[in-house]
Length: 132
Image 1 (spheres, one colour):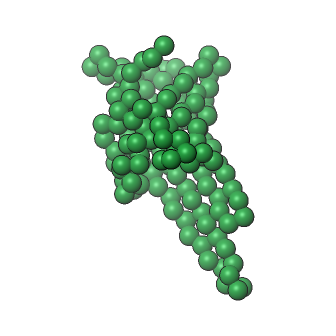
Image 2: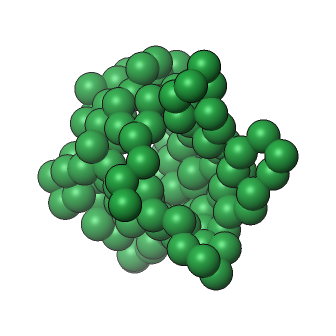
């Protein structure tokens, strides 16, 4: 797999997004579920948010898929969603992947609440290779 193009409001970290998706593993199971495991799990990609598991379905033009994963602790809530399509294009397999990451942090220090939300969505156009 190779990320050909990365765009969106999360592109301040294009290198990290490319590292996650270049060499990442997409598995599609007979029960209609998929799993995306990024390259760099535990280094570039957070282990509390990846791998992402979701559902897929075959369509006349290819495969559509969607999955989410979330985590929380005392001061933050985090989530990632991945959706998109995989289809044959000009004799090759291509994918369009939307990845949304939300990080919500909140704390109260000396009675004063603090918090911020980071909501990023990127679109990754990828060349795919079938293995197995």
